[in-house]
Amino acid sequence: MVKKTKTGRKTTKRKKRESKQRLATRRIILFFLGFLVITFAGWLLYCILTLPDIDQAVARTRQPSTTITAENGNEVKTFGSVYSEVIRLNELPSYVPDAVISTEDRRFYAHFGFDIVAFTRAMLTNIFMGRYAQGGSTITQQVAKNLFLTSQKNIKRKTQELLLAFWLEHKFTKEQILTLYLNRVYLGAGTYGIEAASQKYFQKSSRDVNLLEAAIIAGMLKAPSRYNPFASIERARDRAKVVLQNMVNNQTLTEKQMKYALTLPVGEDESYKVQGADYFADWVYNEVNDYIGERDNDIYVYTTLDQKIQENAEKILRESVLAAKKRNVSEGAVVVLNKKGEVKAMVGGIDYRKSQFNRAVSALRQPGSSFKPFVYLTALQNGWKREDRIDDVPLSIGKWKPENYDKKYHGSVTLDEALMKSLNLATINLSESLSRKDIIRTAKKMGITTPIENTPSLALGTFEVKVIDMATAYSAIANGGYATWPHAIKEIYTRDGYQLYQREADTETRILDAAAVKDLTKMLEKVISRGTGKRAKIPGFAAGKTGTTQDYRDAWFVGFTDEYIIAVWVGNDDNSPMKGVTGGTLPAEIWRKIALSIHE
Image (cartoon, rainbow, N blue to C red; front, side, top):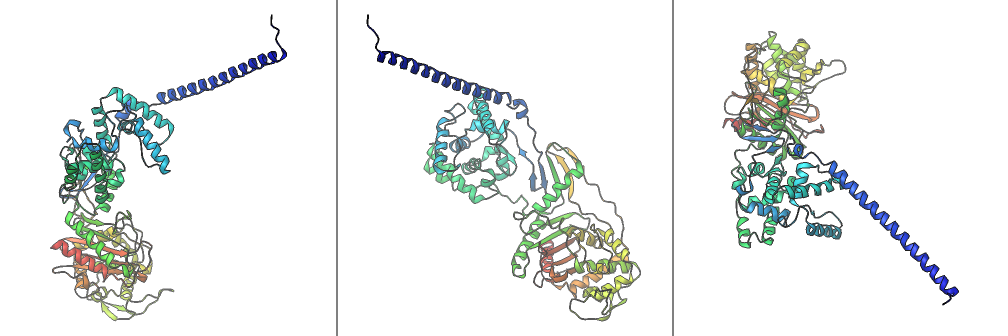
């Protein structure tokens, strides 16, 4: 029998103690592992239980589209989400899915909904570059996100995206998943799906797109708002080159085919589409619900807009204002009506991309002397004659001491002369000999919708008006004294052709004395032929009035021809003064150019 030494007993005790410590450590590790497994399982269960209802997600409603068209049927603008018919994969040229797969998910046919290789590559790239530079989502994951989830970035959504991707891969074939993707993906300008995008950007079915157009569509998937052809055709083409190179790298295209693709045309002739009518389209779109109420179907709104007048007015105003930059002119607005009050053109500013504020219908500006015809019309309706005389002499009303533009006094003048030369003092004397309430009533009756302050200075147009209101008021003179209301919507149809609205013929309501209107028209004709509006002179009949406000903050020319009423305003949004720009200069010149372009 061998006796244990004291050292041996100590060693045995130490081993037992170490064994207990290792056992305790294992238990702790197992506990934490178990906790992590249970937590993960709970998290997974939570994500599964909170998955969206798949049936409801597939049938998710959208904002109905509203397509605004000109009177010739050409498209002005489309609002809302535009979806088109479902396009099957076998209906598309083979290079369409090839372009998409080569750019968005090269291993689409090899993975099971989640591409570990692409995810790892993207993660390493992002870490190396120190920013989010590359995504690792598969097409299946994008379908899951587009159909069932929001774009919110968090762990829960990403987990659910993976679960749904696995479900999609189990439920559908690769071809069906790609078909879902191509028909539901957002492609910019309010379009969802390849067919809607192809119709929007190229005016053709996606079945007929060429190789370059297919590459442009595939290129848009990265950033639809940036790379769509409407935002920038140059950026769209540059991005398409990247897609074509991806196709070469993926061996679905040769170098020779790539070079050929870059020579192909993009889209059909776009002359059918109205250019520069965004302000008009916005105005019409905001009015639609007043006509037919809320709706849940796509509609087409047929309007009174004349494409040629609109495009010419937009071009003339923009070029004229930009050319007058040295005179501190930065903005302008134009409204063109016919004698029925139909809006034929509307330009709400010189650059819609920089400012969507519609100065034709929303801006409030002082009309200056372009308001004077309301004073003279009131006088004519109260028995005054064109040849009657009024004093153009110094006057003061309280502390107010108005002056003429030329700082001179013209003594006794006829009404004809006073309006032709736009004499302030004679006009105020005339206004004060009438009832100012009558003048206000006349202006309101003719179409001025903004408040008019009952003060002596109203005769000089010191209150604020809208450009469209001035055009409407002058249309009552142009049509012989009948009430008009500016309108643009003629008919509204659903996509299936069901009529929701049709404008009825307006009943003629006389609001002005015919003889007074006739006399005023002759007076306004003299303004152009011999007075302050000489620069607006055109071959044939034209009548109108200049308007300039204090310190040259606003300049107007409002007038009419045999067929159309044109209101022009120029100025600055911040109300800063222009440099010597009067109604008889730049606005009269713009008015003349627009009138000539119409009648040519």
